[in-house]
Image (cartoon, rainbow, N blue to C red; front, top):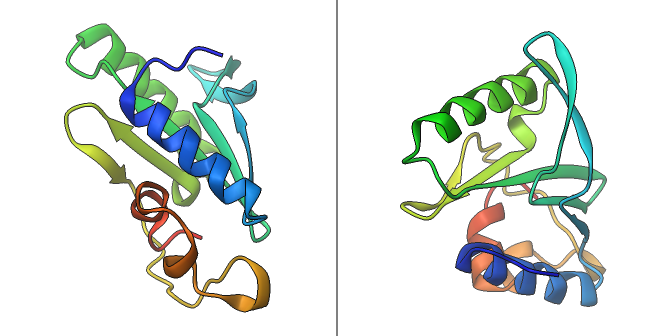
Length: 134
């Protein structure tokens, strides 16, 4: 498997660690269908993360400086919104790092054995990506 971005590589390793600790499951670039321009289009989010009965979609936006890529991302983002997934969307980019589009802000959510708080058990890169979401 070839991982193109440092953010993706670091995230992949953090997700692997969390999966090995039985905190979550994830898939790398799984097929997923979104409504884009009045059609259902197959896309491949960088990661789909399953934890605590919730699913999160992590999109790394590696070429936002390109106008064509930016336009495609805006259409894709609209697809997530149409599906009601805006709360489950995590985005990163090479310029700004982690950017959570929406946060629930609910710090009561726990994952892992014995209800240990997420902040104590996830590695720093994953913790910063999922703050307020898991």
